[in-house]
Length: 516
Image 1 (tube, rainbow, N blue to C red):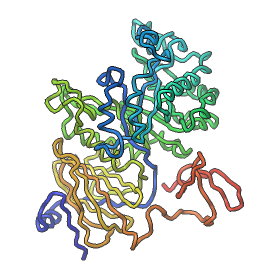
Image 2 (image 1 turned 90 degrees about the horizontal axis):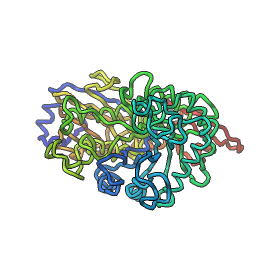
Image 3 (image 1 turned 60 degrees about the horizontal axis):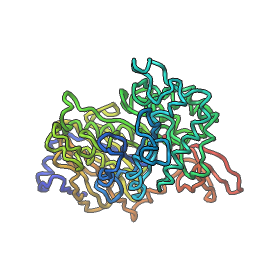
Image 4 (image 1 turned 180 degrees about the horizontal axis):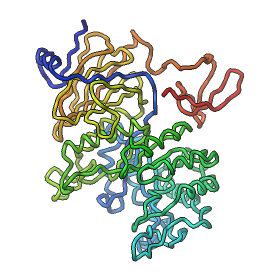
């Protein structure tokens, strides 16, 4: 009989065995079925707390890079339209009429640390729009004019994005992607622009070829980012063959709609994934209930963990939170009204919750899980889980929001020989790492999961007794000489999603692999 010991709670062996016999057991079975590969996690560099003009780079220094405590690798920036009445280029000697300099210092650091930076317009320049202003047009002072990109200016939009790419490159930042529009379905009185799904298709279909991908090699185009990740925006793009080929990433936000809601992120991801597109959640800030004049409590941190987990279950490949520095975000602002723990430029508990994903899930591929002993698959279930493979590792996450501890029985697809547990149990006990002692290679064992906890288990596969997890069986016949490549021509060890198949006779074709 295998003897499995853990030091998760630093309990004696006899106490742990006793607990396992008295607690209710939840069983999580991890399957080898593969889903999306996860690009990473990040936040936005465009909040007032980071002024003046983003020159305070301490937040990105704390949050970004593989050697940081948090491990973020994606940063979102605003592509500003430069509001009328703002400080002008002449006043400060900029070499562009737009105030794009704000994120340059932080973007440089993110790039130096191997990260991804992308830009989103809140509005095109006011002179391109129906209301003649960068403002969204929703207020009485703006005349309640529906602010849209004028049809005669569609051809100017992508050259304007090229200007942004050129400016950032001149400052030493190669931007990785640009978006079409922040929240095209939300009529606002601040900077904004409305597009219908049909207008977005027309813009992309007829003019996206003007995005200068030759000069700015590797730059990718992100769809407009609707407020609630409604699939009517992304599906319209995916269903148009010409528009579809220009879009690399389908994006959206989660305001008012959880990731697994019908008709939103999960459904939008289906068609996007079918056509080999990435799926990014590019903005959301988790609410603080009842009283916003405080830091989030531990239950709210667990709900944030569940949102991250649900995005992964919905097919998300990139998750980008809203502000990186705010009392409800990752880095403290120093504002006294939010409590003594809100220390300026120090990491907040929410950052450590994010690190479970950003440190361990980035670069992994999600695999299937089934759960018994508990109801799952709904938004904010009291227990949630997901699993991933990454190199020689199997990663299993477990989130328990209840007052009761459980036994967690893990059934893995391959034998593992060692492991660690990274565990968070409250706002003061964050990311405690302990070793899982495994006496002999095993696929199944039980660990105790504390009440109100977020646990990440990272196991090393035992290669002496099992097939390498990085080379799973493919459910179709093919010769050894068949090769697979992504749509950019890069070789794939394992075909997934939409890819290019090159046969032994030299012929090629596009093919879609879906193991779901």
